[in-house]
Image (cartoon, rainbow, N blue to C red; front, top):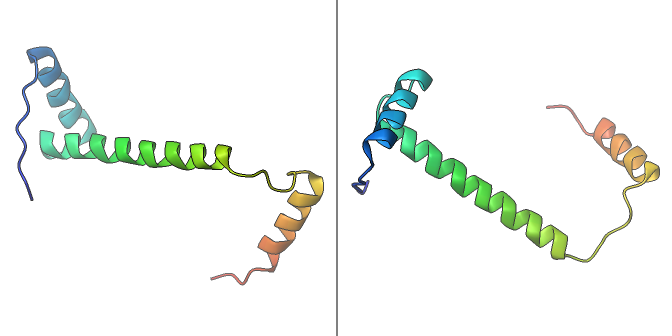
Length: 79
């Protein structure tokens, strides 16, 4: 694992320390890693949404579409 040092103003360091305590993180590093993971997930989701918006439209999602979808889900074997 690599190491990265960051500098924070006192107000942000206090905020991080408070979050670590209140949310049950063991260290400030765990808290920051979680924030970075969530940001990465957010960016992946944003990219997927943009790809979907730029893609060729499929069939409309009308009542028939949802009926077919429900039937497919109900026929799937439960595991």
